[in-house]
Length: 107
Image 1 (cartoon, helix red, strand yellow):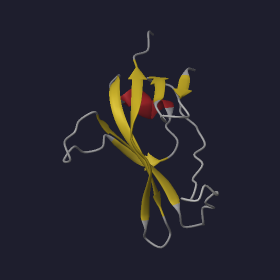
Image 2 (cartoon, one colour; image 1 turned 45 degrees about the horizontal axis):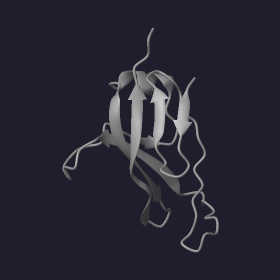
Image 3 (cartoon, helix red, strand yellow; image 1 turned 45 degrees about the vertical axis):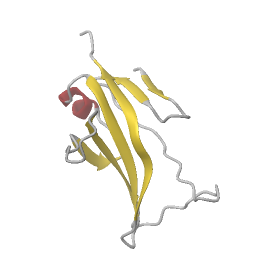
């Protein structure tokens, strides 16, 4: 399995049909760790590499991409966001428009 995540740019590169499991650390503006509460969730949005504000995500889910989900996607370049949806209703975008590259598998 080849999954690469750049810690500076948050760019993800992986092979179509592989599984992605990763840990996301959420920090407050002051740099201290944000402790997720029982009602908080991190949501992953994957969409086309377009500047159109009307473009719809091709995948919306909590963090963890299964092999079946990545195999169902076209090998291509995408953009992704990760949102923290807080128990009280507030939403904070943790990662915004980071590059996600899904390479074709050989076999």
